[in-house]
Image (cartoon, rainbow, N blue to C red; front, side, top):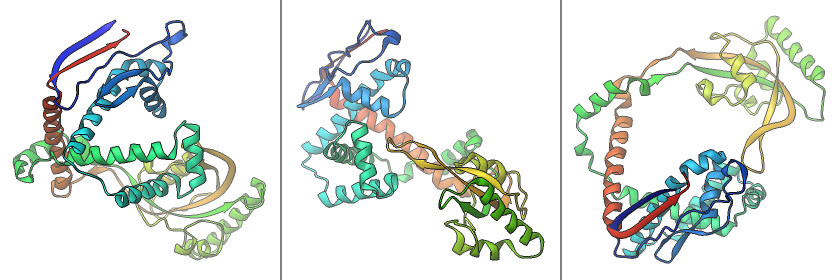
Length: 337
């Protein structure tokens, strides 16, 4: 058994971490959710179930859960300390702001589909009230982090230039392509042969002199049809989720038009993951523009570097602040080796 014991002080309340409970009989040292208390901060407790759920949502293996459980307990304690300090200062987050952030999450992560959102919560054993409470605590924690920021004057031009020289890999630019598309989807379950016939007819029209753009405006079911199929932005390989589109896109030179090819349509599942929908479409792509890899100039990335340096200073300051809160309290963490 690995044991870590230290003395810290916290005037609001002591922290008692009484250890994580593991089922010794299960193979692979499987972590079992027993909802036992593993930490207590004031009237708030941290259960084994909370830690298990947090790691499960990140798709951790049993081995990763065992190795990083201590880290997750410490992180949860830090958040609770910050929230208690926020409450002790008499501060509040306006309900309207929480509602606004709640709706933003609903739109950005679930496309505004409340049924999909409810199914996602049900799959993960959470209620809407619990989700909202977690969101409020996330907002509070972010606020307490931001209050520890240092003035921009502490980040000198010399520090920025030094960071730029030492971290050249961070500022490399990837290959990018701007695409236009003509896509034929299965509206009534058409077989791929029918979709390929439609796409090949379009390709024949292009070779006979019609422009890609005029044909993209009047054919297929692309969401970019009104813009002549043009995506409107430059994208990297990592930003193209479809493997088939990614492969075709970066094989094209600027101005090239692809042969028709089959794409497996992806969709977001109830559990929040993205997978194949079982449907296909046939695409024709045009490389509207394309750029090679390179390196961003210092002036372009200076604000980014200043934010990175500010975050480092902020993290150090926040750690010192938390240490002060914990001083003279008793902390004991016991995890199996």
